[in-house]
Image (cartoon, rainbow, N blue to C red; front, side, top):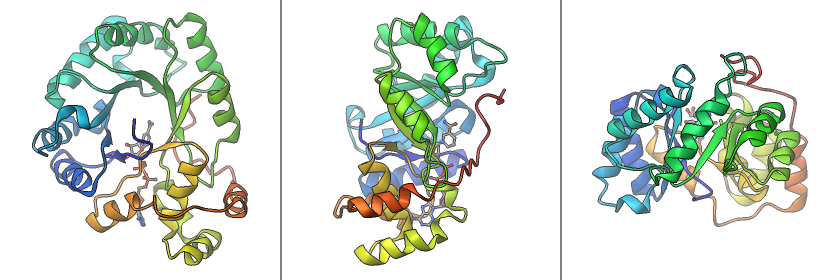
Length: 261
Ligand code: NAD
């Protein structure tokens, strides 16, 4: 799995086609969509029309909350494949644990079956807390390959990154740029960027890569799509990393996974 990929949340189906095409053109080889984003068709078409071989693109989609349960998840997966126009995904995730409905262990059994059939090359989770992860791991035959969680310098998830690593899961960061809101105006990030001739967004993405996260920034703007993948030609020093680590202010943007249903 490429460590840096491209996300398409809040991108309409038509626009997803254009954005994913621009991303593949810019060199991204990993695309993150979900049933609930309602753009699996546009995403799949962009991949099919890119001229790239299917096996050269790492494709992730996710099971939505109201389709959890063993039979429901199997059906939901079939429908995702149909919309994506492919016969396998590289990674299938449970989007949220939804502890209130408590169906994620049954859903996981369906993902294990899909994995055994080779229709998902890897399976994982998203928005799992230590508690929901441990309950899943008690029952699981296959350990999730990763946990995709909200993670950016204002909410750096040190404890959850450690919890994932202790359980042998990779951490994947969603909203890695803090959705662009406020974070990218931060003077510390701007200052570090000036030192390397890079933007605050590039500094943040470089920080993710260097602390070991898989990262999937989103943009629909071609120049930013290119900017966000142009992060492999410089390296932050240890002091920069420490200063970015110190920006955490508990600033969660999205829902709390313990409460999301
Ligand atoms: P993000 O942190 O990637 O921020 C995207 C926004 O930042 C853009 O819309 C734009 O306004 C701004 N931006 C992007 N590049 C920029 C640049 N170079 N300079 C200035 N501003 C820039 O936010 P996101 O879309 O919420 O997260 C990324 C991906 O993570 C999503 O598209 C989706 O695939 C995934 N995601 C998953 C979950 C989940 O529950 N699993 C939740 C949210 C997002």
